[in-house]
Length: 175
Image (cartoon, rainbow, N blue to C red; front, side):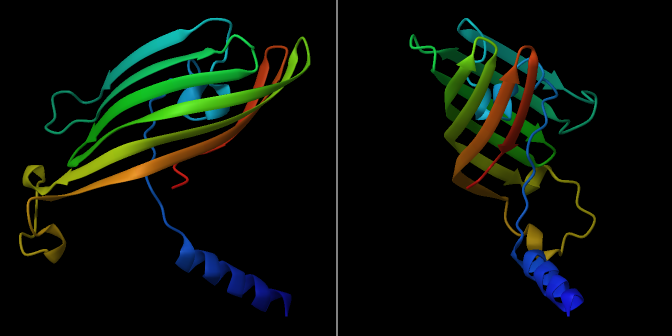
């Protein structure tokens, strides 16, 4: 009987799951706000960072990521505000967007904090079929010159800081 319930639960999740690809800039160590909005305003100062990452630059449509972040704590030292803007190109896919982040922290003592964060933004995702290398030109999924979709993006996160140890959990692209 227990196996039947587990099988039904598995099938329910199998047919209700939607997926997306989240960009991976490999710099979250320097700026954890990229993935977890709870770390917005992490630190004593207002911080700005620019990242430009190119891979396989000799190949056509090679991946390229550009990212700008700006964040800091408000004077009350409990809330942080930030913004990040990005452009992510991979093959025929091109994403351009940005998020505004907010964090709130509960201070337990001088070196222990619990942080909550949310981010809201927009993303424009374009697929350009004209730049694709196509083996079967009669594929019905590749009709037209491309697809374009603009969507609202939301992220949420939780962070725990104890001395120099930082732990976090985040859910990117909620919407």
